[in-house]
View 1: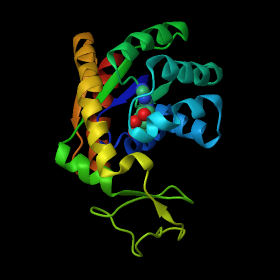
View 2 (view 1 turned 180 degrees about the horizontal axis):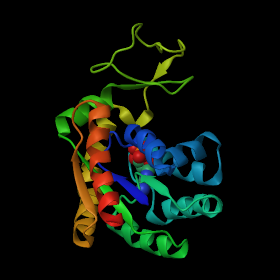
View 3 (view 1 turned 120 degrees about the horizontal axis):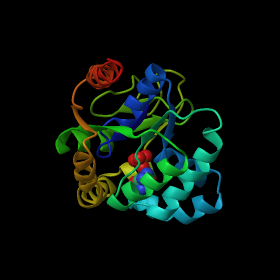
View 4 (view 1 turned 45 degrees about the vertical axis):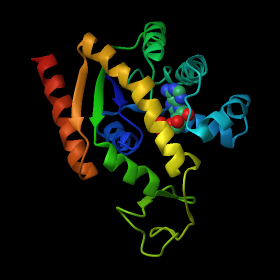
Length: 222
Ligand code: AMP
């Protein structure tokens, strides 16, 4: 089984991905994380995308596909079960992804679309703070740490992602509506799209997603 987690920025793709990879034994690729790592490692790709990402713009379809291909080349030696988080994000990436799936002989994916109001997204993104030591997530509006600016777990310093400031978040939302939302239509036409209400507690959202996947897996063996 392969899964695509689709949804606007802040819809909880990263959190749900961590639950899903454990439950269904999937290898996780977040294109956003892969690109952030490339920036931190100052690779050639990292240097090319740094400014674009800081502005909240999308990286070119070709470059993201190249990053994904490189990553898959290594991973398919061990598994053919993947969870794609944040990819595809444009209609062109859907097309490129089909070529990649064929090239690596991957089974057609199930697409889970996380549906959530824009109001909630804005609070989640602009309030999000990450521990620079252990990566634990807090939110200044929704889930404050006990001591402001410090992680409850390891006392590391909390920081805000460069693209989570209110101005950049507005831009990311506009880009999502213009470039990424049309991707849903492609998957709807293919008939593999499943939309889930992504409001509420992360474990509740996970139960909804798992309910859908388990039904599909059950139906496919009966
Ligand atoms: P994310 O961590 O998924 O919110 O992604 C952070 C940033 O990485 C995005 O705002 C884009 O600049 C870039 N990015 C991640 N995935 C893609 C993609 N599939 N296509 C283009 N840009 C991407």
